[in-house]
Image (cartoon, rainbow, N blue to C red; front, side):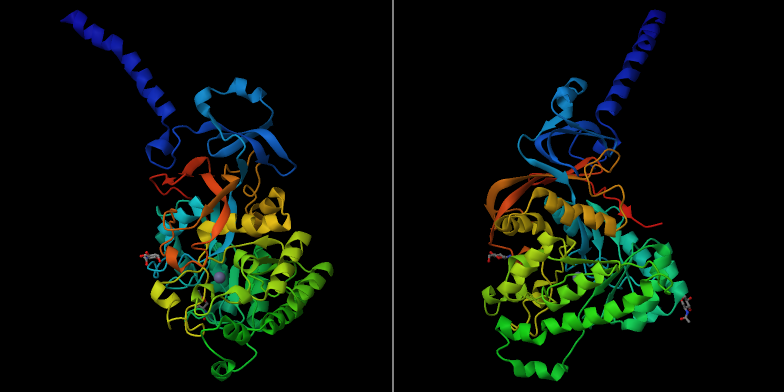
Length: 501
Ligand SMILES: *[C@@H]1O[C@H](CO)[C@@H](O)[C@H](O)[C@H]1NC(C)=O
Ligand SMILES: *[C@@H]1O[C@H](CO)[C@@H](O)[C@H](O)[C@H]1NC(C)=O
Ligand SMILES: [Zn+2]
């Protein structure tokens, strides 16, 4: 009896070591389903790693969710066990995309998209962080209370990191306390519209509201994002302009002069942001610029005179042109509208010259009944392009015809967006940063057909369906968790909510 008891006791240290070993091999994040990888210390190896200085052959060492080192050559292999090396060969290893403009419609309009499907699609598209827009959810995010509803809705339901813009609307613009509470609660900045947004609880602002918003934002060093279009004609004229099934009719209802008028007004307001002004130091970001002519010239002038302004455009303005949009195909309806082919070429030039700073998806889906409402009537269908999962291959497919480089892709999709959203530890493959990484194969071509896994709630409303694209996402890492790999997601939604403080 006695010796049997001692024998059991003698086994205890062995048992303890086995338990320790188990927890070491399968750490918390793997057991909880956050990652498809069984370890948190590993090396991502490739011959094409896009770092801020150069494209190198070597490895990114990831430990505990951060990038521990970025190493060139092969010597690092002596420090790693073979099971800790994920060798991607020639595939491109790049910072994950940061999409500063996405509408996930959660809470309240989850039949349009929602956090789970939206962030799964983002992960499958190489997006590691997205910033959710304050409208198209119900209610809109225009106060501390409504931001709390957002963060509650996102709890345990996001597969990538998600931050939130708040809304600047007439109701809160003159109420400093209300704006401060919204910003104190973590909104990364504010967004406003200079034309009707189409959403009842998100009315448009004028330049007086915008001035107020800028002066509060200046103190917080967070940006104001503006939808820059001002309506130039009475609604009544819309019926007169032509066949509503023809895209050119819709285009005529929202001419480039709307964008130009808004930008002129914004630039006048920017005087307040100069030294000694009431909004000194405030930053303005113009969302989804479509007009590459007068509007862009105005922005260039303002930038060269020292105003703190950035501007984004979206892949749909770079991929499509008005001439090609088929009659009745309302999947292409968005605001501002997609313009002519020559304008598209000018947008590319501006992007390559650095006059346009960055890209965003403006992923803005809706229920198919609304998107296809009116059976091809461009004036009645809901506006917004659904694109979240496809922005990397779309930018690459159309961009390579313009000779874009991998470093430019990173600048437009990661570095500059990280800066806009105030995310110092994101947007570059560098030691100490979050291990937010996309691995993809620029040389692989595919067709977005029904066999292609699309994780958006309504794939069919995307204008990209059925197009042929190049650039396949293999793997996506968010804070060191392998959240997506070739058609498979990590089981648990472990994205982190990004709140400013
Ligand atoms: C300003 O906002 C605060 C916080 O939402 C609210 O309590 C207060 O009533 C508002 N003031 C005015 C004048 O509307
Ligand atoms: C999407 O379109 C395809 C092909 O046109 C069709 O077979 C499929 O049923 C549609 N799916 C939905 C959800 O409408
Ligand atoms: Zn938008």
